[in-house]
Length: 397
Image (tube, rainbow, N blue to C red; front, top):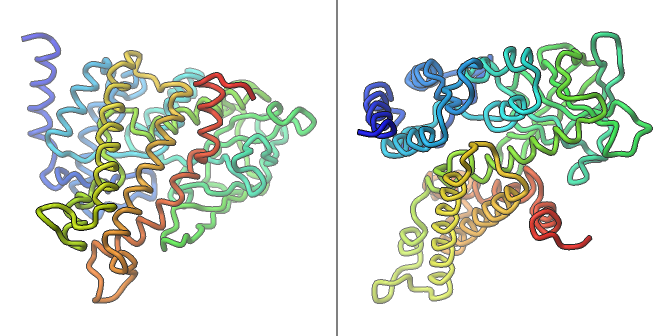
C-alpha cells in the first residue's frame, strides 16, 4: 500500500473510532469556539477536543503552531473521509478562514506563536473590523483612528456589520494611522482584544429575525504595537490579502468539499413536486421545471469546479483574484435556489410562526430573507464583478 493509501486507512480508522455518532448528521451547526462558547451537546465539545489534539481543526497549518502539518494530498484525503462519514466540521469561523492564514503569511514568529495555537484549540474566537457606516464597498474610506501612544495605539471609531462580534474574543481591524496620507495609504492592520472597557458591541437585528451582524464601537480602546500586523501605514496590502482568504472560504475553496449553504434543505425537485404537483412524472409547471434543472446543473458544475480548484492548488494557499469569481457565483446561485423554492411553495414559503406552517417552511422564510445579504457580505457582487473585470480578465478601467 502506498504512503497515501496507508494515511487514508489510518484516517478512516481514527474517524470511525473518534467521531461521535451525533456529529455524523451532516449538520452545518458548527461550533465557533471562544470563551463564550456553550455546548448544548457534549459530543460537540468532545469532537472539537479530539480533532484539535491532532491538529485537524487546522489540518495544513504547521505543527509548531498546533496545526496538523498535513500535505495537500493528505488534507484532501481527510476531507474525503469526513464527507464519507457525513461528519460535521469540529469548529469554524474567522480564526481559521481569515486571520489564521493571514498571520501565517504576514505575522511575526511571536505573533504566530501567541495567536495560532489558541485558534486551533478553539480557545479564542475572532471577528472582523473592516466596514464602517461611511466605508463599506469603498473600504479604503475608513476613518477609525489609531493614535500612537507609546507601546500601543489608542483606537477611536466605529465598525459595522461585524459578524459574530457579540461572541468574539478578539477582532482584526483596519485603522487609519495617517489621516493625511492618500486613502489607500495611511492604513494599518491591528489585532484588538475585545475584553476591555473601550470596546462596545451592539447586535443589529435583521429582517430574517437573527442578529449575526453588529455595530462595534472603539472609545480609547488599546491595541498593543506587538499586535500590529505588517508595517505601520501599509495595512491595506494585508487587508486585501485577508479578503482573498475570506472569499476563498465563502466559496468553499479551502477544502473543495464544503457543502452548499442550502444543501440541508430537501432537493428542489422534491419540493416542487410536493407543492406544484406532477404531470407525466415531471414537475407540472414547465417554467419552474426548467429553472430547477438549470439551478441543479449550475450547483453541480460549481461543486466540481470547487473540487478541481482545490486539487490543482498544490500549495494549499488561497487563490488570488479568482476567488472573486467563486464568491460571486456562489452567492448568486444560493439566492436563485431560494427564489425557486419560493416560487414552488407560494405563500407556504412565507411562514414566520404559527401552526399553519411546518418547521421547514418557517426556516425557508428566514433563509430566503437572509440570502439577500449573501451578495453584499464579503464584498458585494458588484465589487466582485469589478475585480473580475480588472484583475482576471484584464479589461481597461
